[in-house]
Amino acid sequence: MYSFLFYFLLEVLGIFFLVVSFSVIIIYLTTMFLSALELRDHLRRNRFADYQDIITSPIAPGVSIVAPAFNEGQNIVQNAKSLISLHYGKFEVIIINDGSKDDTLQKLIDAFELVKTNYAYNYQIECKPVRGVYKSRNESFSKLLVIDKENGGKADALNAGINVASMEIISCIDVDCILSHESITRMVRPFMEETNRKVIAVGGAIGIANNCDVQDGTVTKYRIPNTLLGRFQVIEYFRAFLMGRMAWTRINGLMLISGAFGFFKKDLVLAVGGYFPKTVGEDMELVVRIRRYMEERKIPYKVGFVPDPLCWTEVPEDESVLSRQRNRWIRGTIETLQLHKVVKLNPRYGVLGLLSYPYWSAFEKFAPIVELLGVLYTLTLIVIGDFSAFYFIALFSMLYLLSLLVSSFSILYEQIAFHNYKDKKDLNKLIFTVLIEPFIIHPKVVLWGLRGHIDFIKGKGGWGQMIRTGFKKSEDRKNFEPETNA
Image (tube, rainbow, N blue to C red):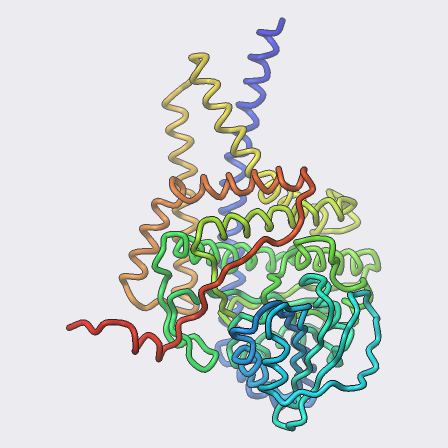
């Protein structure tokens, strides 16, 4: 009896994994097609766009840039100067000192001639107590506002900044990111273009600045990172932004905007109660909550996405730091999906409930578990002598070639649309990384995802320490790189 149940279970699992494999192939091919259409249309719309018109337009929306800072004393002044020098007509920069233990606040006070004001702070969204609001005596820094508050984490700090934001659009960013001078103009355009639907949020693509030249707050020369982990993340970001999120934008199913660079309608953020501080996936959770708000009120809406590289960040190239980041990502995904499980397969929520939620559940939340089960299933077949090498190699080869196809096309999309990586040696290294990623990097990603599940079950919270080495400036490279003969 037990033998029959055992072999029956193996048959069921075999059918399950076969269905999953072909589902993956169909979904990724569909994603490639949809993203290609969306990228084509984006390039057509922007071919003759004059963004100077947006800067000078009287109907252009105001933007409040909200940037939390915790122990950022080393670079906070340079980062703040970069933000207040962005090219846009009506914007403000709100930096929130989230209970830093270093000299972050004092450096801001000294550099920008800040004084504590009798600001009538309104706790529209609940957050940790605010100790003071600072403005500059110097009119040159009139766009800058600094909030000093007790430590409450990134989501809590963002809520504190939203409480004082005076513009109709809120831009939530990481203070240590580098923004293009025209980032605001490009990101607000989707809010201005749509007439039949309300644009509730716009996400932007994130570029990787490791090993690139940075001058005056702008990436002046692109280079791929020196490490294998860094190059893997370049390809991963291409897949995520130029392929995945472009495809979801095509069908208005996007439910994730990067916390490093996202624009939101302030009235809607206030209506849903701001960021949720008790999750490490506050960026995804806010988007899903706003979408639910709109769906439940049957208000036509859209979540936009701009694929242009307008924001650059430093990614971890240390394996232990990267593992903590991926652990946090999977825990944030699980938390968001559980908080909004009413959406699952619910026709009331349209694309969000019938497509987006099931996809994120199957291919983001449960993917590491399914892959582990696949490995255990294969080992079981080998042990009991029911293993077919031919079928295994055929299926593995098909999935491996699909991986190469998707990653290669994501690189192709970047080259066609933006062509930032002009050195053929860099492209050759990226192609080599594509070839070896499924064997060397992907198993580690699966392991980190499994650990994220375990930590979630244990109730582990927090972000984990993210160690950064800092961006390389162009002048630094000139000073420290050895000269070579052509």
